[in-house]
Image 1 (cartoon, rainbow, N blue to C red):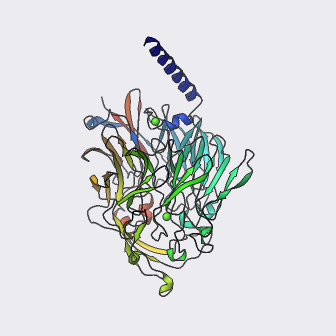
Image 2: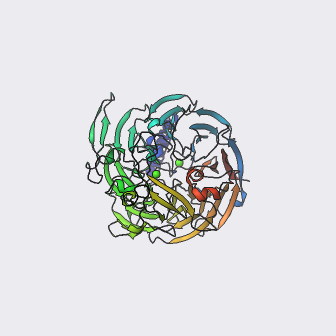
Image 3: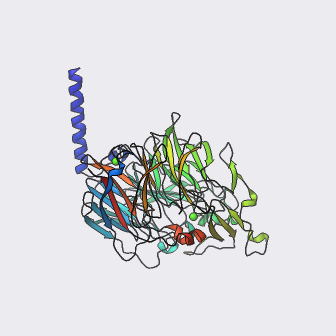
Length: 581
Ligand code: CA
Ligand code: CA
């Protein structure tokens, strides 16, 4: 017995030495894989690459939260503020947080003191569709890596802020940009592209995070051929995505959209990276009869090979701009690894994370007009009367207008949901809105909007648009909801302290009891919150951080809803809280 205990001690000591050694060398794959469980840091977008946004920390809870107070606030400064959608990372007492206009800051976690700042020099003529936002960085080895609005990746020394490598993703003049937080999986840096409204072709790219050297490229539209690269950077064929013209007419696949603009999640158990793909281009669905694979889908990629393992399309032949980019969050249910996704199209999907097999789907918003439901095979039961009409069926200029719900900004958009293994509930920032939408003729022109549609977004109800909903993935039942007047646009965090945190455009960071939904705390941050909160611990104390700064797609694209919330003020700051003793 004694000997066994000693052996365990030795193993533990070695493990600790190993960890210390690894930390001295920077952030390792093992540390990123363990991110959800390690409470002293936040090393990935999603507090773990599975994207559950769950922390096991408990000292902030419904009993103690009355003592939660700000420790520091830091301004991003600058004349230009706009939407702040960044989820910060935390490592060894330093916070890495991105800001609007492709900026990144390193900050002392205890004092809020700025350690360094990098401001990317942006050219004239960048074309971000939906505000000049950034959602966060990745951290690997001694580098922090983030993407820019002119479609570049920049890797900086995490201690000095000096640029170590830089790589161009694509031509910003063709509509490419980059706003997602990069994903690290199996020692590779995985990124997508933004630009789905400009007829770009979505793809996932894998690079060596230490050097930026390309490893493979996987296009998301069938007919395009993937590439792999040898050590000298020489490209070779890595197989075609799908089958040419199987679900696309003529040449339309060449500008087919499916932008991977929200990045991906990764599950170390399935060894798959899950990327969502955006709308097919153009919006006018009558110009591209067929399912238009792999647009508006979740695509599961084998990280090592860059091959597609499975796909699941949520909106075939999308005619409503229902980008399928929303995060697939993997979790355990009934002894199986599942993936859950709250799609822009208003349905919440449960898939088998190993093979993509459809398990269940149910609406998570009150009104869905485009489909009557999802059949047993996982295909939507379409309502043909609610598809915007073909312009060529009438005067050739404007097709039949319909009122569709959700609106194209979605039942849920970029703001990530959270999952609690304690309660077994998903916490989904949902919105209730619809739109008048109609089709128009369109032809592709490089760098020009590729829509072929007109639209006006409208609220469905007078008293609220946003609703934070606690959803049981087994039944589809809403356990509780907290309504919000403005549309919710910020992500969610849940903790083993039985709490759920989320922000509102009205400026509040709120906390509710995870089981009952009772709001137990709120704090006014001075501008709208459209980012996701994080939590971690340092010297035995639990910290909580959220970025504040109103903006994003709603003020730009929100139609009647944008008018309704035009009193909200912009900002740009980081707020950090802990319990007052
Ligand atoms: Ca961690
Ligand atoms: Ca879109």
